[in-house]
Length: 261
Image (tube, rainbow, N blue to C red; front, top):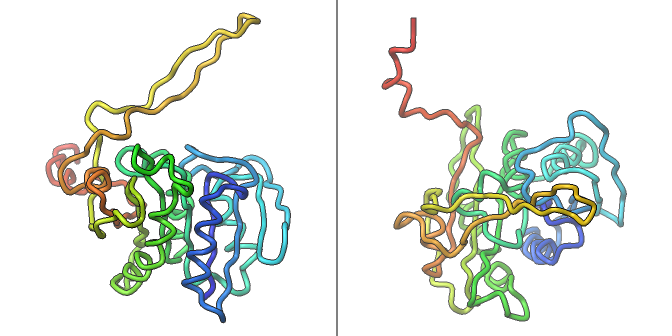
């Protein structure tokens, strides 16, 4: 198996090292693991692409490249340049430092990388490690992802149906904020929404008098609806959420039919 990996925390991030080990396990001794990852942290860029200026690419070593762009840029560069003559069998994005459950999904560069791979017709999985009181101070906070990641991916690949659709499936996997030994299992879960939790800003004034604003998130320990992603994560389960890039609210098409003329 040929596996492409990327992330949004940058090519030196510890979560990428965890994902390289997971990918090597999946690829096997005869397989290949290719890394095309952002040269610098790209957290929160979503599905952004550098459409108005070129992206510099640096080869770090065999099968390892750093791109001065977003995770989606990295996937595009891999598919249409670096690996164009022999495309990957699987694209993995992560392992993100922090969860991409619930509303975080919409901002995540980790998700953006997997989404772009799916738009390119490739199987894709985004992986993120939830942080919380039970794992943030461990020697390896990514322990749950490191120990359970390969098994989760194999389960996904073994059960995903073959499709011929415009917007292919990709997956959002979040590992719970617990030690690996305390993971309770895997749960298929819908994307949730943490009630009352939104991104906001914290204003600051520099000594020069210039105004700045820090973007900040909300409480990540708030439960989503029962059975949805962040809820099962906080209960100790790995969440697996199947997704598509189609943003249409399909359930509203009939209800809003009066708009037609």
